[in-house]
Amino acid sequence: MGKAEMRKVLITGALGQIGSELAFALAERYGADNVVSSDIRDDVDCRMDGAGRFIRLDVLAKDEFSAAVGGNGIGVIYHLAALLSAVGEGNPQKAWKINMGGLVNALESARENGCSLFVPSSIGAFGPDTPQDDTPQDTIMRPHSMYGVTKVSGELLCDYYHRKFGVDTRGVRFPGIISNATLPGGGTTDYAVDIFYKAILEGKYTCYLKEDTSLDMMYMPDAIKAAIGVMEADEAKLKHRNSFNVTAMHFTPEMLCAEIRKHIKDFTMDYRVDPMRQRIADSWPNYMDDSAAREEWGWTPDFDLAAMTADMIRVLGARHEQGLLV
Ligand code: NAD
Image (cartoon, rainbow, N blue to C red):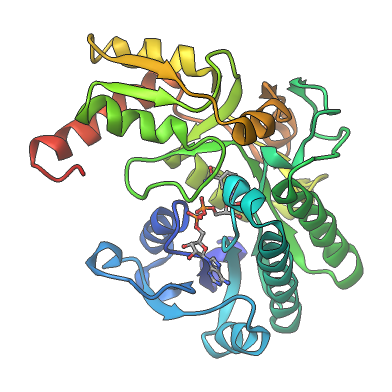
């Protein structure tokens, strides 16, 4: 039995896009009694029934954070609370405060209570000087967005806490995450989720990125698989920790549009480019090399572009037929 299976798990930012689905996966794997979900928001409703206990926690409140970890017998923290790339670029000071202040408190709470800590990094940690094709695991990282600055700083800080204090910190560089449950929280890759809702509801979509903008993406079941997989990996085999490149597919808006048309024949797309998000997307990899994750802890995705598109349309289409898609 791996470490994580014996100890309770705390998720921060659990009402967000990833946390709201990760909580169910962890509850299913370790038992709902062993999962505590938290967020600064407390608009928790029956959506989260069955995903463990919920507590309100502001990750900037250090004493409350550490007390929640110690008081609930937590052994593993999934630290997801953060501001994403587009929102963060709109308010860089706040992005630094939440992303770095929250991370320092997560690291200290983990150090004080002997916890393992998962911290997601992002393709946003790369910048315009990074090789854009087959982006290596270890390469130039000089991001231009505040989000990226916090992600690179976070990776370095997590490695530092491992070396200096022996904290078991691990992470992955997530690409854009596509899900059919919770809407994304203001990132540069949100179009790849929005497009499905608009395709089903209106049969057309206006994209804010240029048609040939290639980015790495991943369907939510694979994102959850990666987050749990890296935390359950055999520590002795890890050469890297913070953070592993992981990807499942890469595509452009034009390619996604063509794939959706295989299911919704009349679907049309036009473009109104948002310069801020285009600038961010242009500075990120076209596609990453994730061989370190494959070699060190056996990472393999289950969904490619065709499988993800078919599943999104199946799930959202069924919800639309029940009148539940808004
Ligand atoms: P999200 O924006 O959907 O959710 C973040 C959650 O954090 C929200 O529910 C918000 O209420 C909460 N939060 C904000 N400030 C807080 C605070 N002070 N205290 C406690 N909670 C607070 O984000 P997500 O998409 O679920 O992303 C989770 C993590 O994964 C982030 O670190 C993000 O950078 C990373 N990531 C996400 C993606 C993606 O495509 N979704 C891609 C790469 C990396």
